[in-house]
Amino acid sequence: MGEFVDKVKGNVNEAIGNLKQKSDNPETKAEGVAQEAKGKAQQAAGSVKGALGDDI
Image (tube, rainbow, N blue to C red; front, side, top):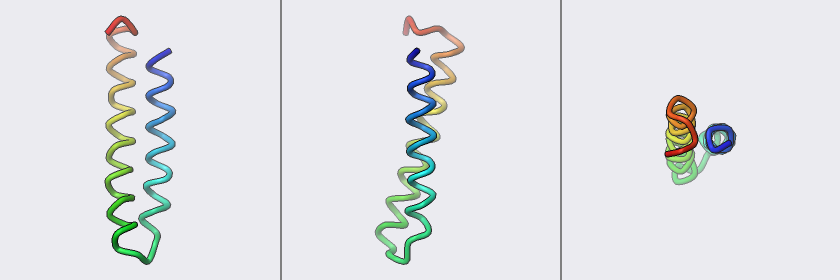
């Protein structure tokens, strides 16, 4: 189940990051880039958990 949770959290962070990047505020745009990257990392972690099993 850890795989699924990580992938969902990753998708949510990526979507929020994309929305923040559309802001006119440069600080918010930077937060969006960072949040999107965090989401992609969470999805990758979920994929690794899926490949190795939830025992890790």
